[in-house]
Image 1 (cartoon, rainbow, N blue to C red):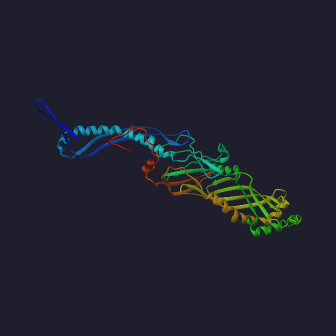
Image 2 (cartoon, rainbow, N blue to C red):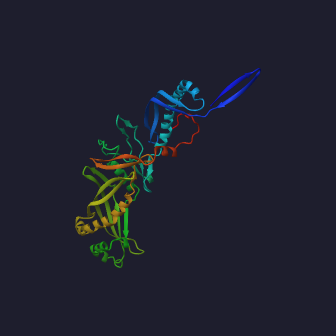
Length: 398
């Protein structure tokens, strides 16, 4: 800072500049800031801060000065401190408004709304309505529907019960109804991937011997195709259904199993076509922001679509086919479900102390939140390139 000193000598004026170097150590008391954020969903169904009201004031400020002209500054301190208090009070709300409407909204932009799960299906996490806010909770109603990528506009009607969350021990709870899981299985069914084929060496040897013995009469009549390799085609006949009870989660699957001989350079010869009904137990858990499912075969039944007599003949195949499902088919299915589906969270935020609780028609996942990255680090990463600086201030910066 400098103060010009002017000295008159006759008709001559000489201007001198005095420089001083020092510092100001300022503090504020009675700082009052009251903000109200209005949350809403945007056109894409993403959570946004749509508006903010703010009221801020500073009751008192104190300042200590250093430098050669310290006494002069202290004499003028009333004017200096009053100006500083006025400037700071005027900059608090504009800076907070910029932080919420621009910076925090850029953080919310990192929350996935519509994602592809794999090459077959995707998931829609868009908000159905504006958030519901009470004195101690923030309630967000997400769509939570899977869709086949071949028909992304497909909608599955929701007949599941409406989840009601009563737990309060964790910071956040996410409820998943039967509709969430049903839409996933319906989408895979629509994508045409719920089919599995085993042929030749992929058919377990013990099962192959048993199948050839069971259908010996039919195979014997097919000479010279007796030694042709076997082919088993397992195809789900309807979208699987999920049932959630307080005792656990299960999945019901209906399928067809077609057994054929595949002679070289000749059309396949069908030996049998049987219906299968299975019930799988499902263990649902949360790991690294992904909801994962581990399936296990609980019940299994096969029967003939032609006659009760043939169903009786197939009874001997019940146990070996169940073993085939447990040892060959279930590991393949669980390998596909191991990846899971991501729960929508802003970047840098993770779940800890996860707990899964079953209810009638839905389950809840409770967890505490942990910031694996600093909030400023994530905000700076997605900070929009400034085109103007309407809130710049030498006193306050966000």
